[in-house]
Image (tube, rainbow, N blue to C red; front, top):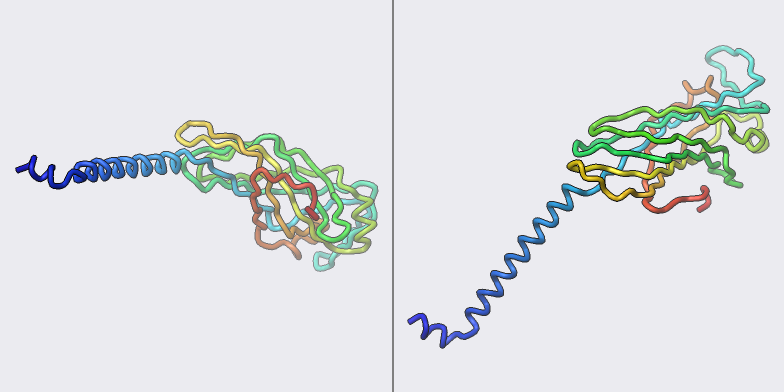
Length: 215
């Protein structure tokens, strides 16, 4: 009887083999997706603390707490940059190496305010760390030429880093990552209580190293 059925339907066996092959390929595809999901790289999340960068400049006089202090011309200006780095995932640590931070004016002529090297840091799983380093060589002449007597101005913070994660202990490919955070307020530290806001989150741009606010 079986031989008679096969004789009547010669394609039946081929259909069965094709269906079995399709099921096998589907299973392989699902397994591959699961493996890729488990081994996918993780990215660090950055934000600017309170959306504010405090400026420490000369020629300042003590004023009552309720008085705004205006920016005044100084030969040197130090900016206090505080970033929050988060790793919300629980699968892997994240290494950020060769990290640099740049500040660009958000208004024409979109000049570079200053740069600093943040170096290397690691964010453990489900952890947030604070990164704080002064920018000692801010472009004081640019600030005072463009914002004389102002109490604040807005900048874009750009962070560049080589990011690597280690899901299941396996090192993933290192990604050259660029993060942009805007708008961030720059003002004298005495005014932070006035202009501090929520953290300004940064947007990631993989393999897209920017070179200025106008890019």
